Amino acid sequence: MSAPQLPPLASPSAGAAVTWDHPQRETAFRRWLDSVAGAHGLQAASLRIASADASFRRYLRIDAAQGSRIIMDAPPDKENCRPFVQVAGLMANAGLQVPRVLAWDEAGGFMLLDDLGTQTMIEVVDRENPAANQGLYMRAVDALISWQLASRPGVLPSYDQALLERELALFPDWYLGQHRGITLEGKARATLDSAFELIVQRNLAVPSVYVHRDFMPRNLMMPTDVSEPRLGVLDFQDAVYGPITYDIASLMRDAFLSWDEEFVLDITVRYWQKALKAGLPVNSDFGEFWRGVEWMGLQRHLKVAGIFARLSLRDGKPKYLADTPRFMAYIRATLNRYRELGPLLKVLDEAEGVAVASGYAFGRV
Image 1 (cartoon, rainbow, N blue to C red):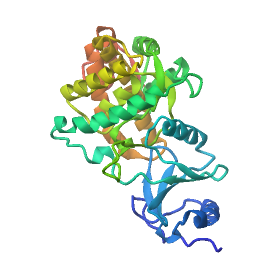
Image 2: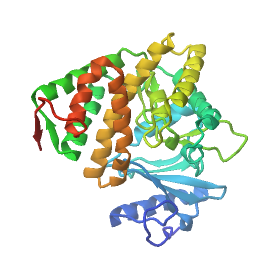
Image 3: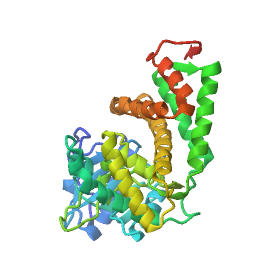
């Protein structure tokens, strides 16, 4: 069989034809696609862009004899696909709707997957009427509960102190240092370090379960079959074993979508009630559990602010910085709510010119 003929080059937006940065990778892809097309009924001429994510992975869509399939293009020198395969299996065994791995060229970094559809949860939410989304969010909660109930220690990497600290370091290194051009020095740096140590301690004290680590509407798919109650789950390859508060914080304090406090509390309470009933290790006092969610969310938001700055400045993906003000608002709201975090709020406000400097010294990069 001859190598499949790929469509003409086009811009890399969803639905567009496929371009390649390196001829060698295109040749490798053609060879792999030729080897699997017959067994899976793939129609090479239909290949087009499905989506790209914040990593070096991208996803292509291709028509098949029955429906369509997704191809993951993950350069092996930049992406390790083994965690994706492992977590996909764990989630499928837990009863979640995830794409099956139909074919995998580990050495080449190409993978053929089920296509869970084209419509994400974030595309169907009613942003103007939060209460109208309660049923949709509870479907997300059901998926989360199922995932957490499958948890076992020693299977996934631990969300340990070292990882938490590395993630938090992204904020001063990339958001403040590279994006804002600010280096915290002296008392200001000591204040940040002390607050980060407290954030890590609080989050490590929370019981551990399986953590998706990016559980939000942009990574949840609406089923193509209206009789299917389960939302599809994507982008799970970075899953870890860590604080049970993480994924509900991620769901309700979204990277790309903000809700008022009333709706956030409503869904969080409903998740907590279901988790308690299911026997998951959530604090039996909702007030304590909510505080844990806020501290976990704070860690995530500091990390993501740093990641979004890095994506813009290092990886040439400036669109992510547009959502940075959302994260800074989350961060400030939480810092303002807890007295022990007040000094860090003052440092951040002064670093960004929100308040008049009063004794803290800042050095410029």
